[in-house]
Length: 334
Ligand code: EPU
Image: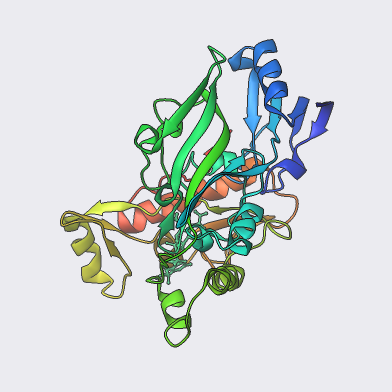
């Protein structure tokens, strides 16, 4: 177990925001995790995983608990599928790479998403037509009050678009320690409907590795790498609006991209809304709207969390003024 006092959290959040933690404890086994959860009241701990979906706007007074449990294990090996368990502290992309290299199919479209395995179910990470829930078998999580371990099956997690029970009624109540996936060994179900992937594989036969490589190339062409430019992926969710509202906007903007969710609801890409307000590439100090994907806010170096939050508020205001749509944050703000 690693205990530090008064350390910077810059290396622990992908925005690269420099705030301090009074006390920082990193646990690398389930026993250590239990020990810390026992020692502190739930309200005294601030839990951090890969730090890829958070914006820290102030120093953290509570003790930061860094969940760094490593390990990947094949739980069941069948003719057509495997059950693979990954501990919460495994880096998500390294886990995807392990699966692709072992020819385990189902999460290749989720290549290069920043963050750790343990936080992936919280927001049901998704990209290029695939969401975590599609291969999720179950996860194990520790109840912070009772210190008992509970298994959450698919239906218990109430997964939705960038959403789960862990963000809603069970918010802050559990620490996910392990996630188990059901992945294919044969007859992979390739998902290639997303525009750029469809194009790439129009004349080429796909396999897990080539899909993963294509996803990596698409992401690298549009999305900034947090290692070189601080960011938290999409800062906002794509808003879902009623058809009437959509048609009203479409009158003025016939080229607006959209996805039909059902007869009544339409999802509009927030990146397009933001770009249309003219804010793509906008920069104030070191806080900016990414120049290639307006849905991503970036830290050019020394922006504070508050600077980035101010920019996020400006983006919300402009989109609200122009379209009458209030963008909802995807990133958690502290
Ligand atoms: N668009 C613009 N301007 C922009 C950005 C996008 O006009 O600056 C338009 C694009 O031209 C396209 C549409 O918006 O017509 C959708 O863009 P894109 O395919 O880049 O995807 P997105 O809807 O902006 C979502 C996810 C991403 C995920 C991609 C691909 C959310 C909040 N974001 O973005 O997830 O990688 O789809 O599946 O749902 C993340 O969650 O951090 C993330 C990066």
